[in-house]
Image 1 (cartoon, one colour):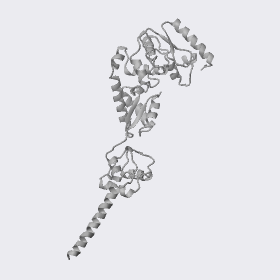
Image 2: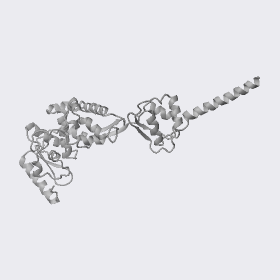
Image 3: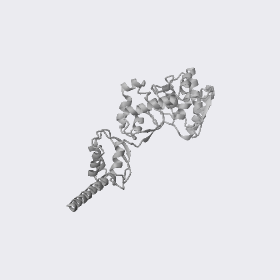
Image 4: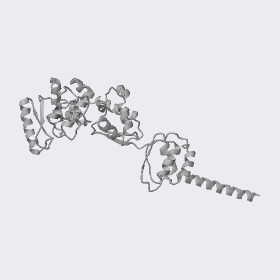
Length: 344
């Protein structure tokens, strides 16, 4: 009889051991394919467990769906209703490692670079390459009248909310969270290094200073001249002289291939035409660099009222205090343009 029970015990132990080993295999054996081609997995908002499982199988990320489902049940992951984000996977991961990552929502952040755009629609398009909301969804949120009023912006000034830089976001960032972060970065920028104090001294608010920086940005790519050009525009604003900034004319015309601003362009009616309308235009004409922003905020102190491009392709300018000096500089430059065959 004792021998009989020993046999039964051994059988039970063998069965238990087999079950334990099977369970161990389910949980800890590799179930993410070894030759994983796409190591980044983007899971859209609103994805539940069933939809997630379909994504993992359709993309051939996991080897065995059944074991994934079973371990998910053991780890209380199979009841999740909203699983979303950008996740970095590793080849050969076990079910436990994969589920732990997703359950803890350990997303892989993504660097979003915001710069070099002309319109708010361009900005929305650029950002949508990095985060889940598409460009139209993001744009509609940015130009929504109720949102603009809440933020204290108009469609013309909303671009000035965005400080050029590289920021880290999660892929499933909503338009609301994106703008909230940008507002925070905007305030952080302006409330540092005495920037608010400086523009207040010059009678500008943040939107106006950003707009001025955008004009400076399109006037020169020479960092040695940005603060000098800024000083010219500050002097003209102080003295009530029209800015007469060619980049604003080009923006108003809407033909950004123009290399030479002609009289017909100067006569083009647009609120952005600073030859026709005094003061700053309604909003920025481009997203300025940080260098141009600080040039607008901290201009060079001088008496120049005019500047004109120098002959050549070095993007340098001649500065003048009087109209006669400026006219002479302009004649020299126009003669060079004609010689180079640059007529439009």
